[in-house]
Length: 358
Image (cartoon, rainbow, N blue to C red; front, side):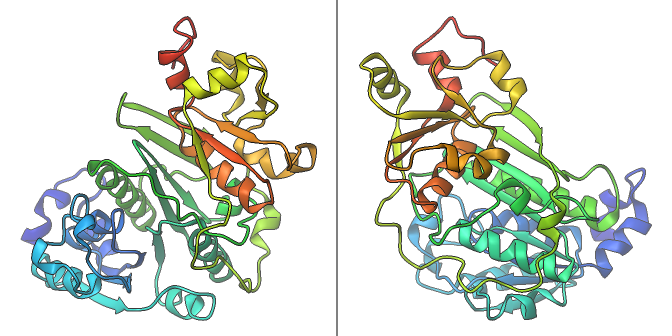
């Protein structure tokens, strides 16, 4: 047990919690930007069995953030390279490879043997598939997502808590395949937070992020936790859907709007809908005159009151929540959808410097 000496010394953790980790099994979906730090720390901390779902190969563009891989690994299976190095890190951990794309035909079978699932995927379709499989099997899962300089973490379906569908009710038919870049350190930070939540769940310590969404912005070091409602109807799923997303991007991709461009639209009277998806307490601090306040969790219910033929611009604090909502609106049939990059924070810094910031 010398390997875990520093954990064993922790008050409130010790040998009892370490034993729980040793008996635990965790499935990690994805061995990319989020999956790499998740796998490294789960392995180092002594989780007994770790399954890895990852059919992709190492690309040179991965190495800026996926620090488990090396330049010489280019073109090799991530799964093979990850298991080789994780086994060197801790040979006591059982590593189970799943060299397949996760689908509605295999998800339930893959998930069944594990106590907890950690979602390190990069598209909405997979996230909904993970959610539905975990609800059917009554398994908790930890979700993480990243966008530019902001990340988010939450724990779903834990002891009856809210599910991913409580936050975003409908997936639509197209995954989010619009990538505009990410700072290399961000997935490392968010992945570590995912592991932290996983350990709290597995060891029954602390307060997991249930019914809560934590967002972190690494440019201004802001961190916030938002609550959302648990909808009991979302726990009634009994079968996986037929389609969780295609392999190609939408013919109408998500577009991006800077705050300067948004200012021009407003000043010139451009005919569009500006939707602010922040929570009420954020809206009360500051908002743009003329914007419509629809908190993220209420967007689905508000869709009938919006016009699908008019352009829509979506704004939040920094741009991550609004990106998710904007993608959802595209999937729901809206013709033109724009995500306001940098959010209300960028507006306050670049357009209206008298605006309160938080």
